[in-house]
Amino acid sequence: MTLIRPDIHWVGAIEWALEHFHGHELSVRKGSSYNAYLIRDEKIVLIDSVKYTHADTFVAEVEKIVPIHKIDYIIVNHAEPDHGSALPMLLAKNPNATVICSKGGETSIKRFYPGNWNLKTVKTGETLNIGKRTLKFFEAQMLHWPDSMFTYCPEEKILFPNDAFGQHYAHSSRFTDEADQCSLWQEAEKYFANILTPYSGQITRKVNEFLALGWPIEMICPSHGLIWRKDPVQIVKKYMEWASGSCEQSAVVLYDSIWKNTEKMAQAICEGLAQEGVSYRLHSAGVSDFNDVMTDILRAKALIVGSPTLNNGLMPTIMPHLEMIRGLRFQKKLCAAFGTYGWSGERALVSTLSSLSAAWRCICSETCE
Image (cartoon, rainbow, N blue to C red; front, side, top):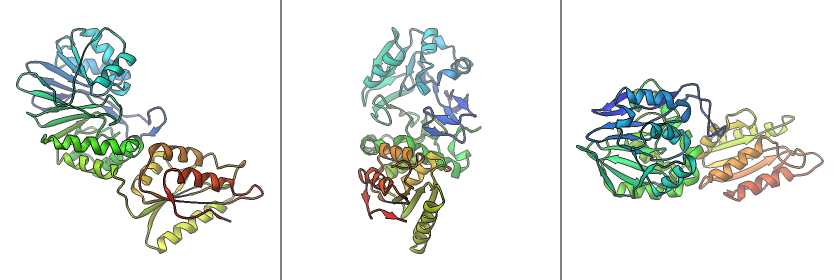
């Protein structure tokens, strides 16, 4: 546990050895944390909880500060199991606690953690008086689930946005200004690129709606990673930039090869890009980290994909990349495809171009060796 303000504690759990998140959807190099926050006022409030695998330790940490049965309110900003699956244990120890959530959160809680709980739903602008402090709520649908909401404490100027503005980053400190800034921003961008990119339109609308409320922010306490206390709005600005599709004048070249011919083409393309002053990232689909590729695509202007024909189709290492790209719905990108083939023709190239052109503007036809 960590005291982040008088009577406001971080009471989450750190998973140092975590290697994958959302099953195997997201690679994690620096571990992660499941952040929860305890506010002691005339009423005791717990904001979010942790993954069930850490529930026992989590409860023990909370009880170093206050007995579970004395908690008056448990706020569920988002009910996904990495934040909500300790809820049944909490409510077994304190069935009288009021669980506060959005309308979507009520649906999620009833589906994931069925029980005769005391649920209270809130809407944007509603407040909860807990003594010297009040809490305000903001419905943040699709950041990144329909049940998502923010909790804000005006007296402390602290925002608790759950899955928004976080990173998968385990650290001995709790604050972003005490961490390596390069690693911090790499993890924040990777988190956005691989989890939040599909909801860029909703993010833009919801963040603008939130900012229009004029609630001043001195600290942002997300549900993963470190707390933003030094210029916290910088991460909000970055989200708006990433969600807008703003990108560098750079390219990602993604390929796989059987007998090095497609690899030679990829290298030649990179040489051409360099001659034109265009920076690039070259990724071998079977070697590069899948999620690092997606992060590079987020910031790049163009994606160039190469594959030889194999069994009348693409290399199996290329196909999941194209499916992930389709699902993430990156914006404002240019695309091109290249490849090699023998007796079976250009089907791999046609398939690649078809996948890419469904989302982006292709700038050239297939080029074959």
